Figure: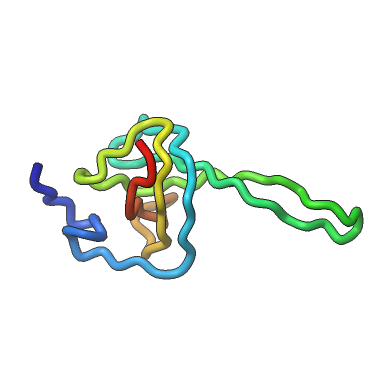
Length: 95
């Protein structure tokens, strides 16, 4: 399948920079958009404990990647693509 997506980081002209994450795809209902859940820990000095948190990040899903629900993917920060999307899927770690 040929990728004609201009917002694809490998076949199109979209550049990415800044933050990069690895996370789990928890939703693929929207067209060309996936919701990626990233788990991380934050240390709370007051209680001297670590706090587990998670963040849900909307990311652009190029045609050639074709990621689905429960895939583990790499995402990277890019320019603003829409009102909510500032990340793009750069690779699939595990299908």
